[in-house]
Image (cartoon, rainbow, N blue to C red; front, side, top):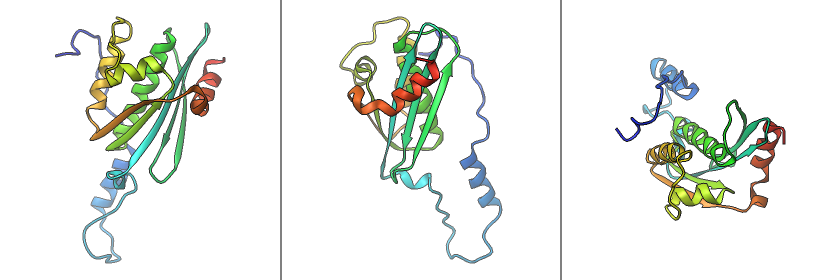
Length: 177
């Protein structure tokens, strides 16, 4: 009901590779007799560990880009660089990067995550230090808070621009800055 005022469109999720692997293993039990019925899949073993996610948005007059870096507890990193094909402010681009990354983490079934960003406004709005008063940012803030509730433990932390250079470069390359 809280989101009914926004024009959101439901898009069914496409097959998730991890789920396809789980379905395959469930339908084709091992003939090697490993003993027990437990199957360990790397994505599921992250329940007791923190994942880390860095995000940034960058805008020019011609283009908007976002950069995302997701780091697993065993230090594997995934880099995402996306171009936004509609006009938005730099703060909206920051929220776009955050919402996209929260969706990716949710699809990976991550339970505990540390979110790191150099946007003081976005991080402090999500921590509750700042109130979200902008009518252009309120829909993003609402969606980000909703997605954050799906994690067992989530922490938002502001970091300096210097500590966020990887995702900053990804966002700037995509935006053409």
